[in-house]
Amino acid sequence: MNKLLYFRDRDEVKALPKGLISFMTLQGLIAPDQRRVHYCGFISWQQYIIVFMPRNCDLGTLDVHHARYLLQALSRYYLDKNTGVVEGQSNELIGNSSLSLAQVILEDYRANGLYVRRKKHFSINEGRTNWKRTIARRLAYPSEDSHVYPDIETSSTRYVSDCEISKIHAQVIRKILRKYGALLSSDYLDSNHFLDRMLKPKWGREYQLAMLDRELTESYSERDMRLIEMLKAFIEDRSAAAGNELLVGTRMFHNVWEGMLDKCLPRKVDVNNALPVPYYQKDSRYIELPQKGQRTDTVIDSEDGSLWAVIDAKYYDATTPNLAPGWHDLVKQFFYKTAAEAICDSDILVSLHFIFPGTIHHLQVAKVGQRGQKNVKEDNFREVDGYGEIFCHYCDPIIILEKYARGQYLEINNPQHITGEIFPNFVSYD
Image 1 (spheres, helix red, strand yellow):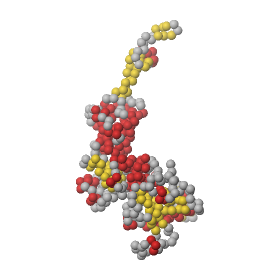
Image 2 (cartoon, rainbow, N blue to C red; image 1 turned 90 degrees about the horizontal axis):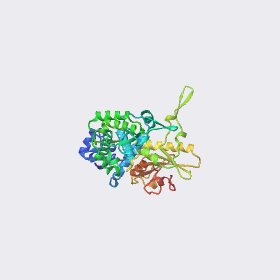
Image 3 (spheres, rainbow, N blue to C red; image 1 turned 180 degrees about the vertical axis):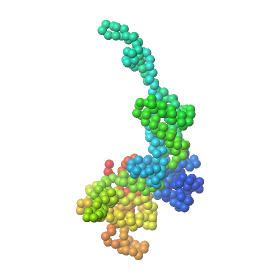
Image 4 (tube, rainbow, N blue to C red; image 1 turned 90 degrees about the vertical axis):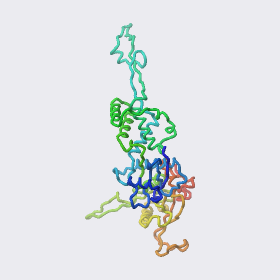
């Protein structure tokens, strides 16, 4: 099994091994003049699986479980997201089709084992009675008011586990484990020596596809037909079946960061359908454009409903003010607060929040002040009225990956989670 080697999205390119830089450049993941990595995911390189975790992760705490959470999170996000993107666009999951197919085939194997051929065996006087064949083939003797059949046609089902389709199935599973094993396999699969004992198929790709086509015409079980179609798709996908090369990830992890936090923050309030939308006048009428209206990232409320928090998940470094969101991000939040206050009850207080990836709280709040103050102490800061403040929070990407991959909410009881910072008396939501 390949060893895992960890790096981070947005690491400096020069910090990577030279051979890895060349390989990623060849794959189109690094441009010749690129200073920082823009990739989160997995790459096979030499004897390693290179794992690029989200920015600001603590690499010293990682193990294979965290790599699996990243893979599961990427798979879930892009499976749930109906963007309609086409192959080759920059915001898609690279290698998605191969990964999804491998996951489904492996899950089927976990649940059902290797393919077995069901063959019906016909016999006489042993097994289950087949009256239709008996009446058609056997001589009946009269006995009082009925007929007696001295010999009964019977049938039984035999299961053949070493047929050619089973060998093809075993070979596909072996290829999946070689390629994704460190990330997808369980202890059960790692210790299953039965796969190693299965012989390889006799011939190559075209022969295997022909055998699967023939088996498909003789199969009636829904599971068997589905499995055979998946095996065909895997063999036909040369990128999936090529060997142990692995390339699964995205250049646009900021979209995943926003999506994960939106799913993991509890007590969400749906406000987008109530926010204002633009109108354009044409002749004597104003035409509404609801699809171009305001849309917040996430709004959550406190347990007693007296507080709303408008949250913008930002995939920024945010270790210094220079690496934090700029004017357009601040203004957008200020407008969201104005819009939220217009649709909520008058006694509800609305606050604004940024959430960055990280474990250290470098920045506390963003405000708008008078120009020329430079680096000023808190007590002497001259704020501009009418804008308000945006609170800054940091959330460990490892925790978010685990929660999102497992379909769980953030918990207030864990001091590493940020929900308690947003509402001091916040209670976790199940």
